[in-house]
Length: 293
Image (cartoon, rainbow, N blue to C red; front, side, top):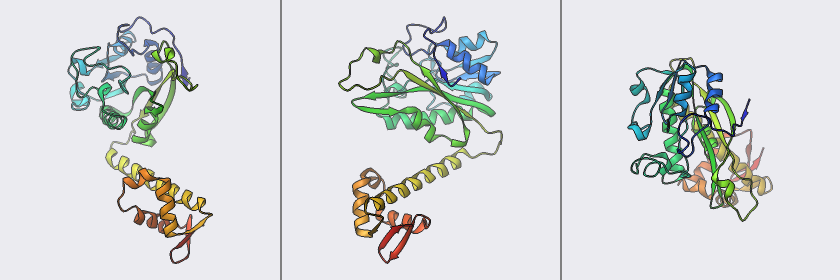
């Protein structure tokens, strides 16, 4: 099933550990993936490890509070061999601060203490690539995480994680209902739907042994950036009636995508490049005047 709901967390782990995932969720995940060796690099109170052991699955639990730092330490080096399933349930968004509150002292590499969403996105990508490295060819790696709304801004951590990982490896996205969440007691000015779900996102590592993941990600991100520029330029031309001088087009692009311009000092040259390269989308009526093909 692609939607899971377990109101009771079960007997596993510690009920005092806020954000603890239900053991029934792990039972479901293990039934899908059938691992012989399972690794949880952010095991928290140990729910996932307890469930795995009950099912006769060899399991290794690591966590920042017990000395393992997923942003600095190799999972593979710590475990000693690649696993069939490497799954994490990271803290996210600062909804629940762990180091210094749930356990020990405040730690700079605690994902619940990220400076910003961008900081979290980058660190989670590093964590997931660390998990991927520790996964066997043909094995599964993944994460359980949700979204967050605060100060009127909705952040989809799931969407960003998927965008930053190899798209051909995405295996499944499952919706997990959240029960007894603190947001259920919050009154918002606007009538917006409460966030009462998390996602289980799973990727399958390809069986091909020689896959340069850095090259794959670089090409993937370059393609996304190129496609975004294409959309921005085409939208600007559409708003100008389908044709325009370069000067008016520059002004419309500047109006439509200021954040895109901040990332590229040579953005006007980028606009010209998009027009010239995408002949199926644009053509020059005459010098300095372009139209949608």
